[in-house]
Image 1 (cartoon, one colour):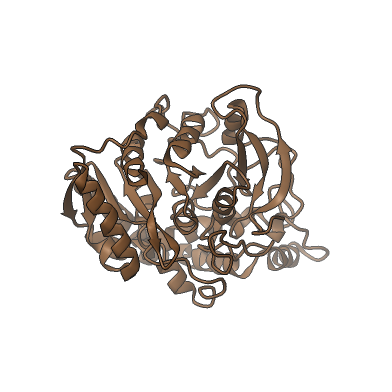
Image 2 (cartoon, rainbow, N blue to C red):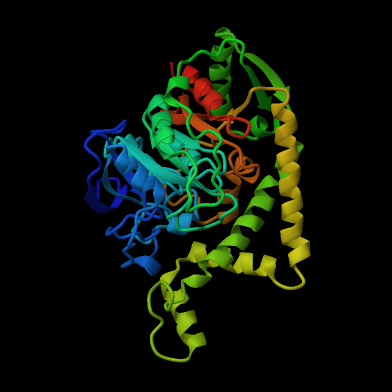
Length: 423
């Protein structure tokens, strides 16, 4: 354990002698498989699980020379926005240890912010890389769906999640993205597009002539101090040759609701295999129904149980069309709105998080408020687009993140825009 509880399993997995990440250390989120090193997903259910293989992204960072220094803490099975639902205790934000680091990749972001690792890998299902990046004052990238292999990632919501890099700077995050991007025969959802791009080279800060769209719906609801930092960063970009236009995403009013119905439905299906027989802690003696129920009662925490129950309800006979089908209709609407907005601009800009990082314990008592905190990030996952969070300044001594969203496989453009904010 570190002072911030960012690393839950210490390890030293050596990389190749040479490569673009030689002499770099990296923390790996605890839901990404590492051969011979336990992978718990922040859950007591998998306390003793040791994978027999490396995830594709772990193979690639090792081939590039990076040394894995440990498994980063996370919200249990990626379910949470504060890294307080981990079975191994909450992670503290290195910027202010009384506050949350964001989630669910909070351990990854905190490890980078605290200097515990040079780089980190997280996974982003509804903002789980960008949220902690913003709260901890580091850079986080959620790639286009299909750019990075998910082979070896313990699935939460397959149609939404992507593995993404976290780093102190845009250039370093982009360099890590170049290493892990590209098709993988073990993951049929990966694509050739963007595989050979040099994303670090795009971090040149040259934004002259770039058009940035600002979705009014995702700015109006943010905290005043956050908006002030965001507008100041936007004004700086304008002074450097950026044109800004207002765009509208009317569907985002329904995005959070649609996201949680889809994510919880997929979670209820994916986590069915954790029954004490196929995976997870044993349920002990008794018939199969009693044993399965005991294993899931003992192994899962309250937030995971809540999401499984809600997802199972949404998929049940009589309610599938009422909830799940309507959520998928809303998802199609969100995708269409983003396509129309990105026809008017090269990238879209929003505050990454509408609030400053809350103090630990403040948000767990009100799950609905916690879910609404993701309002600016979950629409991007529904549309399967790339996005980046970059530190844009501070408010009340706390970091404020700025998010850029690009078209599919438009990672070079969002990297360029973010690098200009950093200068």
